[in-house]
Image (cartoon, rainbow, N blue to C red; front, side, top):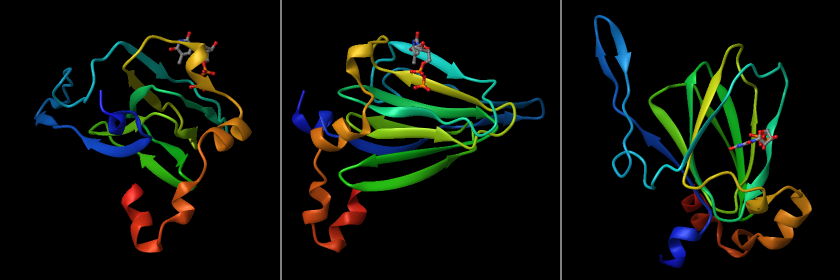
Length: 153
Ligand code: TYD
């Protein structure tokens, strides 16, 4: 695997909606819409008002977050840059790879956040301390001229 594939990276993925007079359906297959083999699926639901989930980074994990019902915000940070994505469509997924700090917040009532991951649950892959995250991944982006900073997202 090239080192690029392990670098922190965040991007939106769009899925097809198969709609007819009965409603809508979106299909996801390994190697098609998702750029990794799906090894784990979990979903976050019954989220309490004002709860913030996540608050960690991973060393190597690749994930796609899809708010299949309702909406939530995902705040991501890497290389010294922060961005907040509103996930409010079952046809959008947020791809997050590697050492990216993430916080999920502002869940609408009844929201369901589906997460696809490329590895089984492994607590050792987590970076729980924001301080450790900042130290393990220095904000090299600050050394870049402003015109390059937008390339991060
Ligand atoms: P937690 O890591 O706190 O969720 P988040 O970071 O998304 O807010 O996970 C809550 C509990 O669920 C914790 O006891 C670990 C467990 N868990 C699993 O057993 N498997 C999993 O794949 C995940 C993500 C969590």
